[in-house]
Image 1 (cartoon, rainbow over the protein chains, first blue to last red):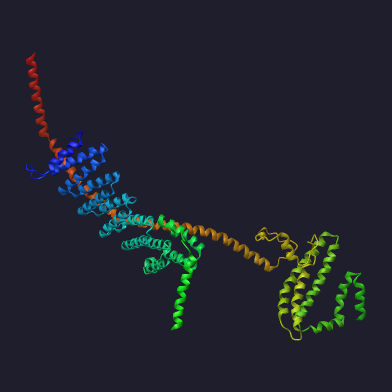
Image 2 (tube, chains in turn blue, purple):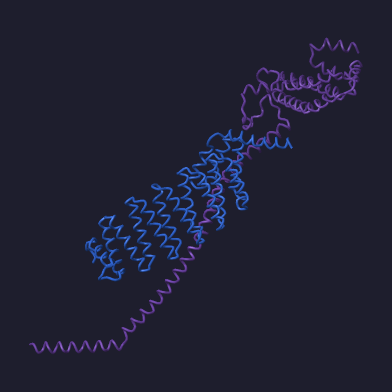
Length: 296
Length: 276
């Protein structure tokens, strides 16, 4: 069989699987074999389109043979070829299907890996879809109690969000990262995630949110007694006083330089916008309560 | 006593040494004593008078030293003058404190005038020539020195303290020591800062490594399990293989093989013989 025309193999395999009067049950075993060989042949011939089709069919065959693992493997290969061809919809579909098959096997790590690969392939072409896949991948791992492995995914998703300039989403995701770190007792990552969230809020020039975030995070003991907490409070007080030099100095400090490089870039660009406006706002806020006291 | 005064007036111009003698016998000059007694209760006035007297003596000594031919004695006299100047400068703060104290019988203007007197006295002391002067001096030598050399912050570190305008008193020595200590601490502070930064980096790296290792522990456990399973499978397979090979190699099979081989060779030889 080796060396013969993959087209012929395909036709033969199709004939095996197609049900007709003479054939009452499809012979998936040999058909799958033929499909795999055909796919190899097409790949050697650099005929990616046909190879992809062959792999799809091979995967289907493996499914029928109740071996989801092989089926998932074929699906992943098909998805990689689809990526080469640039058919993004198929890429996402195939990777998702592969991930489902892996989950059927009961192996969550390869499942999330498949989703992560899909997301990475789609980062440039369809970033929203990519983010969705990253989120799903993180969910898969978290369900299985393997949050530690999800950190890389969180980081990648955050960088995509920031590239898209969706800062509130990014900050929310960072807080979710903090939660995951909390579940597996990774206090250092947790504190770094919270500090990153505060910086992202500040970069988006949303001082109130940043303060709120800081207050929320201070409820957590691990964060409260950490370097990152001190750094965050210093930055927020520098913002409140409108001290640009202090902010720049803090952005160069070692605590911030230890965060993810995307966040470091944001921090170096602080302060964005007009700080004195923030200062006036803060002053006005403080005056109002005094007036209320006077009235009562 | 009047005669003494007039003698002093007439003689003062001509004989500098006479002044000293007159001073020695001043205690017999009742007029002068009366003046002194008036200020008897006033500690300030007393101290002031004492210092003035000392200054005059020093000035005279310096004049003598400048005309002295013998270098050694000139040097000795200058040293003596310097010692006197230092002592007088030490007395000055006491005088200043007294000047600020209110004394009965003295008017308010006099009190203020006393402060000025103290400053004037200070200048007078410092202008006493003690042999280290080479050029003409101005009054207020302290400020002149500062303006001459410009404003240098760290120029005292070369230890050149023997300029003519500076008299090392104990206080100034103490200040100098404190300054040197503070400078040394500043240098070690900078070193400590560098160390602190390095430690920060190390701490962050160590924390990250800690988390990474934690992450890899369950993975290692999995690998451990899988490898254990693979080893046991392999052992099983090996044992079976050994059994099979042993079976193949049993002596009975060997004998049968050899006998059959001999028979075949015999048949072949027979055929060969029968051919030729």
